[in-house]
Length: 194
Image 1 (cartoon, rainbow, N blue to C red):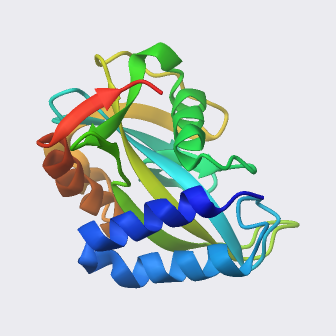
Image 2: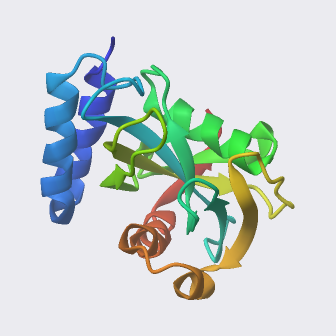
């Protein structure tokens, strides 16, 4: 399974975001140690991809109220073996929001596709699935306009929020971190459809 693409993203992110170096190192270690890291069957955890979806000005973002975790979060999920992690993030964005694919564009900063953020978090055990970690690579995706989302069967709700409202619906540090990171990244680049 091809892991070089993921490792390249992680190396570039570590050089741009030294504050996230420890998290990058944890994810890099998993990727290097497990050739099946892009599959949900990988234990003790696996790589996932998230989409922080914003309007072109970055002032509104789309969150999902996740059924299993019962929290407002960014959209995303399992990469299911997709070696180009960014494509998994776009797929998850489309599936979980109901927004048409042609309305979603990956943001490129300084002409280059970059990670917005990285995070490692624990997913609690459920039925036949043991507790495990998601090693999440997060991408900034711009919706060309604010369209009404469609709630998928993975969510209780999907809704647009003004970025100033995010703190009133979630206290997840990893979600709150995405607000500032996205506004900073939007100042340097453009959205490009893959």
